[in-house]
Image (cartoon, rainbow, N blue to C red; front, side):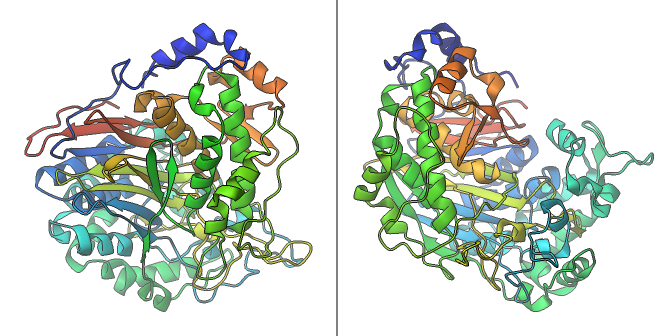
Length: 591
């Protein structure tokens, strides 16, 4: 994928001058043509923005048949489970943020996994009471939470589907039976250094006759998944949560090492939760995100902090803009890490974290230089809690679907690590979301972690699929990303660049990533001009290379009545936009 060049031309041209604190003049939203396809949004458009071209095609095929955004999202997820198994799948969970084009209301469908009834607070501690190594925990039977994506999608379909459930899996079923070519990104993951690549199920599924793992361009078939999809289409979610597949999940997790406790009752008892969206202002928009156990409140806090700076008058060539972003991120993460957990088990001070007086107090911590890691504040309603450093690997997908009726789905979906727990049943991988909990239930002072393991509890998530509204409550945009705990930074950067700096969505997403959390400043060092890196170092930020999977941002914005969509160039992706009733995509972005 060729990186969009106009932003980088600006960066290279003004990098030396931008070391001063004078804001750089930035292009307006209309001063440059978008690098991504656009179409009139007046009467509603069909559009799909997703990381894999096969998944995009599956979603658009459903929209062409008159399907709703939710119908198409189900087809996309079924395909991603096959062609992007390192990131998401029906053995995992998801958050879906839904915009209703008729009522202009936003709702959240929480399909986050839950801990089995037999889970315990100390299940990831060794015999001496110390946390297990992550590489050991992730491959264990204890790593998997009760999958939530399928039941969540069925709930959304019951409320917003237009086509029958049974007709939404055909493309994924055929592709599984006939096979598909391993994509460059999947091939790159198979050639990486991940503990899951040594898991027996991974090696059996991706193994070649000579014992090596498949590479990009190899054809991969999955008849077991095709057979399961036929049952899922005919039986609905019970194909996964009851019967033979449920029993195989239980049996697979009961195997060593470190057997899990999941039972058939855990699977049968899973229920998704429909929640009210959490919304807050940013610039001229209203941004709506999932509430806890998602970290959407952290996203809104980050945006509120940035709104109290002059970052909007700056731009990507100005190192002060990146400094402000980094410092606001550190403050947000300090609060998020301490307070966010499952609201059914812990008190999360959402209102206090977003109160204007608290935001003003926290914003005053942003000085001229980056100092020691900020500590969490004490917002109104804050409980006594212990900070944790939960590790959140980056095995996740995000995609966006819009239909001709003006309905939009923004969904982040995951199996957690690369290939989840590395354990496979009926052609799909099982998640390792239990490792999103804090391994230690208490800190050295005996204070309880908000994100400690408990039976039936949902682990804290960084997934923040968001929807943006204009002043009249009309759909204005949607964003989300993969990336573990870096999701908040990836989405925040892209939102600032697109909504505050007016960059076309593709250019906004392509800007280098910078993730600041605690004492760590990570990012795509080689993508920043040297003068910008030097200016950041002068401000106390010595940027280091970031995590391996990178971001997976997908976004759309409505500009002057037209849809501007973009996908993350760090992955294979596609943006499809077409008017209702079209027989073929109006515009497409090649892989």
